[in-house]
Length: 192
Ligand code: PRP
Image (cartoon, rainbow, N blue to C red; front, side):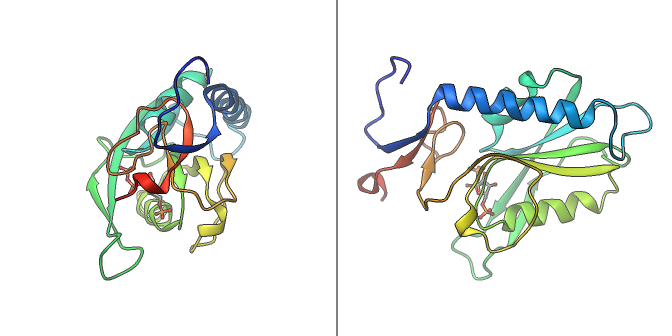
C-alpha cells in the first residue's frame, strides 16, 4: 500500500494507488486518441473538450484525469442530489448548475461510480437538452450488477462485479473516507 497504513474501516482494497494511476493514464490516452483529431462531432469553433465533474464524488478522479489528458481540456462542475430514502426511486435533482452554456461543445461527464444508473441517466438527459456537439460519459467504476437503467458508458476505468460498498478516492460513506488515496470496500461494522 505504498507504505501507507490501511484504514481499519477498509474490509478489502479493491484498487490501490498504483492501479488507479495506471488506469487513469490509460483512460486519458484513449480519450486523447478519440478527441485529438475531432473524430466525431468535434467542436467546430475549436474549443477544447469540456469535462463535467459530478460533485462531489468525482472531484478527485476528475482532477487526476484532467492532468493525465495530454491535450487542452476545460472543466466545469455540476452537482446533483438523489432521493435515496425518498418515495420515487431514481428521482434526481440539480443542486448546482454549470457556470457556462455547453451548446456546440464536446462534453464529457466524469463520474466516480455508476451504480443504479439513475444519476447518469438524469444528467445525460439534462445536458443533452442543452445541445452539445457531443456528449460522452467516463466513469472510474461501473458497478454493473446494480444497474437499473441499461445504457452505454463510453469510458470505464474498472467494472466492478461485486456488490461492495465502495469508498475512497472521492467516494464516501457519510461523507468520510473521500480522501483515502485508494479504493476499498467498507467493512460492515463501520456502517451505522
Ligand atoms: C454517487 C456517485 C454518483 C451516484 C451513482 O453520488 O458519485 O453520482 O452516486 O449512483 P446511481 O448510479 O445509483 O445514481 P452520491 O449521491 O453518493 O453523492 P456524492 O457524489 O456527493 O458522493
